[in-house]
Image (cartoon, rainbow, N blue to C red):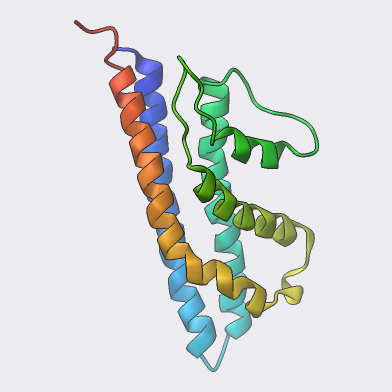
Length: 164
Protein backbone atom coordinates (compact mmCIF):
# COMPACT_ATOMS: atom_id res chain seq x y z
CA UNK A 1 0.00 0.00 0.00
CA UNK A 2 1.19 3.48 -0.87
CA UNK A 3 -0.04 5.49 2.07
CA UNK A 4 0.34 9.00 0.65
CA UNK A 5 -2.24 8.32 -2.08
CA UNK A 6 -4.69 6.83 0.38
CA UNK A 7 -4.22 9.76 2.76
CA UNK A 8 -4.79 12.26 -0.04
CA UNK A 9 -7.90 10.37 -1.15
CA UNK A 10 -9.26 10.41 2.40
CA UNK A 11 -8.52 14.11 2.82
CA UNK A 12 -10.41 14.87 -0.39
CA UNK A 13 -13.36 12.77 0.76
CA UNK A 14 -13.42 14.57 4.13
CA UNK A 15 -13.32 17.95 2.41
CA UNK A 16 -16.18 16.87 0.12
CA UNK A 17 -18.30 16.16 3.21
CA UNK A 18 -17.50 19.59 4.66
CA UNK A 19 -18.34 21.31 1.37
CA UNK A 20 -21.59 19.36 1.21
CA UNK A 21 -22.63 20.88 4.55
CA UNK A 22 -21.60 24.36 3.41
CA UNK A 23 -23.58 24.01 0.19
CA UNK A 24 -26.67 22.93 2.15
CA UNK A 25 -26.31 25.92 4.50
CA UNK A 26 -26.14 28.26 1.52
CA UNK A 27 -29.41 26.90 0.16
CA UNK A 28 -31.17 27.10 3.54
CA UNK A 29 -30.00 30.60 4.35
CA UNK A 30 -30.69 31.92 0.87
CA UNK A 31 -34.27 30.70 1.18
CA UNK A 32 -34.55 32.41 4.59
CA UNK A 33 -33.04 35.64 3.23
CA UNK A 34 -35.62 35.71 0.45
CA UNK A 35 -38.65 34.77 2.56
CA UNK A 36 -38.00 36.10 6.06
CA UNK A 37 -39.38 39.41 7.24
CA UNK A 38 -36.57 39.78 9.75
CA UNK A 39 -32.82 39.25 9.82
CA UNK A 40 -32.43 39.30 6.04
CA UNK A 41 -29.01 40.90 6.39
CA UNK A 42 -27.88 38.13 8.73
CA UNK A 43 -29.00 35.47 6.28
CA UNK A 44 -27.34 37.27 3.35
CA UNK A 45 -24.13 37.57 5.37
CA UNK A 46 -24.32 33.85 6.07
CA UNK A 47 -24.82 33.07 2.38
CA UNK A 48 -21.85 35.24 1.45
CA UNK A 49 -19.65 33.70 4.12
CA UNK A 50 -20.66 30.20 3.08
CA UNK A 51 -20.09 30.95 -0.62
CA UNK A 52 -16.63 32.05 0.47
CA UNK A 53 -16.27 28.79 2.40
CA UNK A 54 -17.52 26.73 -0.54
CA UNK A 55 -14.74 27.89 -2.82
CA UNK A 56 -12.15 27.89 -0.03
CA UNK A 57 -12.90 24.22 0.63
CA UNK A 58 -12.40 23.41 -3.03
CA UNK A 59 -9.19 25.38 -3.11
CA UNK A 60 -7.85 23.39 -0.14
CA UNK A 61 -8.30 20.27 -2.27
CA UNK A 62 -6.58 21.91 -5.23
CA UNK A 63 -3.64 22.92 -3.04
CA UNK A 64 -3.31 19.38 -1.68
CA UNK A 65 -3.18 18.00 -5.21
CA UNK A 66 -0.66 20.65 -6.29
CA UNK A 67 1.61 19.93 -3.33
CA UNK A 68 1.28 16.15 -3.16
CA UNK A 69 1.16 15.29 -6.86
CA UNK A 70 2.22 18.26 -8.97
CA UNK A 71 5.42 19.12 -7.17
CA UNK A 72 4.55 22.13 -5.07
CA UNK A 73 2.33 25.08 -4.39
CA UNK A 74 2.04 28.00 -6.75
CA UNK A 75 3.09 31.56 -6.01
CA UNK A 76 2.66 35.02 -7.45
CA UNK A 77 -0.21 37.44 -7.67
CA UNK A 78 -2.46 35.22 -9.81
CA UNK A 79 -1.82 31.93 -8.03
CA UNK A 80 -5.50 31.36 -7.17
CA UNK A 81 -6.45 31.61 -10.84
CA UNK A 82 -3.49 29.51 -11.95
CA UNK A 83 -4.24 26.83 -9.35
CA UNK A 84 -7.78 26.45 -10.66
CA UNK A 85 -6.48 26.25 -14.23
CA UNK A 86 -3.86 23.68 -13.18
CA UNK A 87 -6.62 21.37 -11.92
CA UNK A 88 -7.88 21.04 -15.52
CA UNK A 89 -4.57 19.60 -16.70
CA UNK A 90 -4.15 15.95 -17.53
CA UNK A 91 -0.54 15.36 -16.48
CA UNK A 92 0.73 12.20 -18.23
CA UNK A 93 2.29 9.64 -15.90
CA UNK A 94 1.29 11.74 -12.89
CA UNK A 95 -2.46 12.28 -12.71
CA UNK A 96 -5.61 12.81 -14.76
CA UNK A 97 -7.41 16.14 -14.76
CA UNK A 98 -9.18 16.85 -11.51
CA UNK A 99 -11.78 19.15 -13.07
CA UNK A 100 -13.25 19.44 -16.52
CA UNK A 101 -12.57 22.77 -18.18
CA UNK A 102 -16.23 23.81 -18.14
CA UNK A 103 -16.48 22.97 -14.42
CA UNK A 104 -13.41 25.09 -13.68
CA UNK A 105 -14.83 27.97 -15.71
CA UNK A 106 -18.01 27.93 -13.63
CA UNK A 107 -16.06 27.61 -10.39
CA UNK A 108 -14.03 30.66 -11.37
CA UNK A 109 -17.10 32.79 -10.70
CA UNK A 110 -17.09 31.54 -7.09
CA UNK A 111 -13.37 32.27 -6.83
CA UNK A 112 -14.00 35.83 -7.99
CA UNK A 113 -16.86 36.22 -5.53
CA UNK A 114 -14.66 34.98 -2.70
CA UNK A 115 -12.08 37.58 -3.65
CA UNK A 116 -14.75 40.31 -3.51
CA UNK A 117 -15.99 39.10 -0.13
CA UNK A 118 -12.47 39.25 1.26
CA UNK A 119 -12.15 42.84 0.11
CA UNK A 120 -15.53 44.46 0.88
CA UNK A 121 -17.60 45.02 3.95
CA UNK A 122 -20.65 42.85 4.52
CA UNK A 123 -22.82 45.97 4.36
CA UNK A 124 -22.06 46.19 0.63
CA UNK A 125 -23.54 42.80 -0.27
CA UNK A 126 -25.77 42.84 -3.32
CA UNK A 127 -28.30 39.99 -3.29
CA UNK A 128 -28.78 40.29 -7.04
CA UNK A 129 -25.07 39.58 -7.62
CA UNK A 130 -25.27 36.56 -5.33
CA UNK A 131 -28.46 35.16 -6.86
CA UNK A 132 -26.88 33.60 -9.95
CA UNK A 133 -24.22 31.93 -7.79
CA UNK A 134 -26.78 30.43 -5.45
CA UNK A 135 -29.14 29.44 -8.26
CA UNK A 136 -26.41 27.54 -10.10
CA UNK A 137 -24.75 26.06 -7.04
CA UNK A 138 -26.68 22.79 -6.61
CA UNK A 139 -26.05 21.66 -10.19
CA UNK A 140 -22.45 22.84 -10.19
CA UNK A 141 -21.77 21.18 -6.85
CA UNK A 142 -23.23 17.89 -8.08
CA UNK A 143 -20.93 17.99 -11.12
CA UNK A 144 -17.89 19.09 -9.09
CA UNK A 145 -18.52 16.51 -6.37
CA UNK A 146 -18.60 13.76 -8.98
CA UNK A 147 -15.32 14.91 -10.50
CA UNK A 148 -13.70 15.10 -7.06
CA UNK A 149 -15.04 11.67 -6.13
CA UNK A 150 -13.70 10.20 -9.37
CA UNK A 151 -10.30 11.73 -8.64
CA UNK A 152 -10.33 10.34 -5.09
CA UNK A 153 -11.10 6.90 -6.55
CA UNK A 154 -8.12 7.30 -8.90
CA UNK A 155 -5.92 8.05 -5.87
CA UNK A 156 -7.34 5.07 -4.00
CA UNK A 157 -6.41 2.82 -6.93
CA UNK A 158 -2.91 4.33 -6.95
CA UNK A 159 -2.56 3.46 -3.29
CA UNK A 160 -2.71 -0.23 -4.31
CA UNK A 161 -0.27 0.09 -7.23
CA UNK A 162 2.50 -1.69 -5.34
CA UNK A 163 0.38 -4.74 -4.57
CA UNK A 164 0.56 -7.86 -6.73
